[in-house]
Amino acid sequence: MSRIESSWAILFGHPILGGLAFVGIAIGLFVLLAGGQAREALGGVLRALLSIFTTPYTFLREALAIVGSAKLAEEDYAHSSVFILFRLNRIQYALLLLSCVVVLAGGVTSALISLYPSGEMARARVLDAEVSRLEAEVASASETLAAAAAPGFRENLDTQRSAADAAYQQQVQSNEQFLQSAPFSGGIVAQLANTNSADSVARLRADLDAYMSTCPRGGAWAGVSASDCGRYRTFVLELADRKDAEIRLRDAARDAGAAWSQADAAAQNANARLVSVQSQLEGARQQRASVSLFNPDWMIERIKSAAGVLLLSLWSVIVIVWIGASALSIFNWAILMMRGLERSQTEKLQAARQGEIR
Image (cartoon, rainbow, N blue to C red; front, side, top):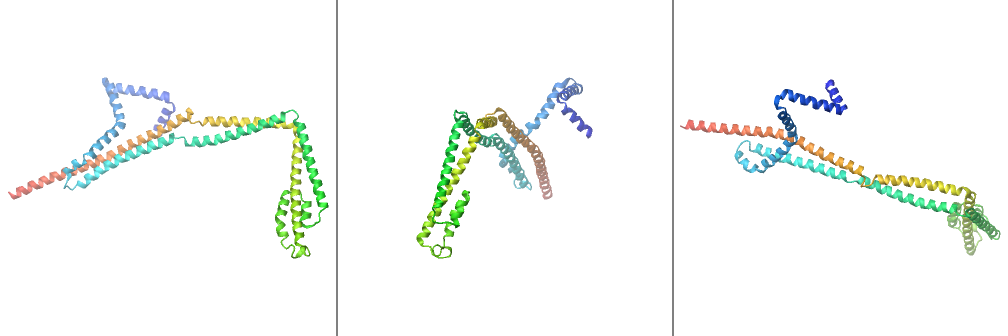
């Protein structure tokens, strides 16, 4: 067995040399064994091999005729002991035909589904979105580079830095003057005055209602009038707004200072970012082109896949018909034999009865 497997492996491992050897040996055997009828023998072998594919078609055609003429044929089996078997045999023919139709329909459906580029379409939509995003980034990077390379760029950043710092310092001085003239101190006022975080300002503003819930009825608010509570609330809210403005101006001044300090490297950074984004965009465009619905390579692969599915379905039908036809032929032959024996025995019984009567 291992030698046979080795021979097959060698034959298919060297297809050109193996094919030539196979053809040469086959021709030699036909000439040697068939004598002067080598061509006829070769034709017979080819017809025998071809019958593997043509016989199922012939059987299905005959099966349709058998099923179609079942009503007429069953008259000979009426009132016989094999009548039910005869009908069962015709039902089996019909089921075999339907099985072949189901297999072919499934194969055609699978082939059509394999031709539909659902995966490619989804991939194309993702890449389209990626290309659009990168194109927007390229436009933004180009604008940044143009601004960084424009004359007076560093001077403009210096002007913006000075203006942002001046606005911040002015807000700080205004807040200090506001606190110095404040009629209130301590508590939330002190916390707001000392905070440098926007989150802390938001938290203190949110806690103000709970903090003043007993004003002016008692606790730390004893002796405070309702109008004083209202003025305290107004003062705290204004101070919170002032601290928010101070923090925003501080951050803006820091950003302007950082932009000014990095002015010399801004053009280089902008150019590097533009080159990087353009490279990404080119790669995304190439990927998008590779998943085009009209890409010949993809179309050929899908057509091959669909053809493979169809061929597999046809081969499945051939195998089903050969197996089913063999089984049905045996079953049909058994029914005929049973009917023939029944008829001959019936005739013998009738002849014997007539002889006894005489």
